[in-house]
Length: 186
Image (cartoon, rainbow, N blue to C red; front, side, top):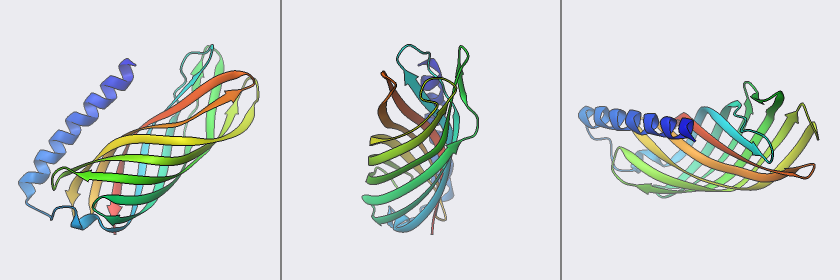
């Protein structure tokens, strides 16, 4: 939990710094710049919690493709994988493939910052070095985030998402992710 709070604090601090720098650069239009197709990439941690085990946190990379219909609504597809595995007391997990589809509700707070919420379906192909070595799961997914406009169609975001709940041979697990990314609005 401490790592999560530190990461969120650093992300918010960086966001405030970037927002201040962007405001000094001049106005770019309130939300109108963000209509249309966008591409993005994120990196972060997958927080995997299984009954009876300590949290494992593989590093993940995600690519996204979205269509923003207005300053308030977008749809988004994502694919990704873990770059390294998560370890706890000799146990190991990798997310060999992550995928998701979301509806994204956006709240433009200022020309420089928008908050958003996502909801949809996410799936994962897991590889473990213990029970049920390889498995696939799909579940309801939701999250919240903030996007900071850098101007010229570029933005950065910080996001937390609950990917899914599942069961590994009788042991319940949950998977969340905390990511930091960059987007290009075409």
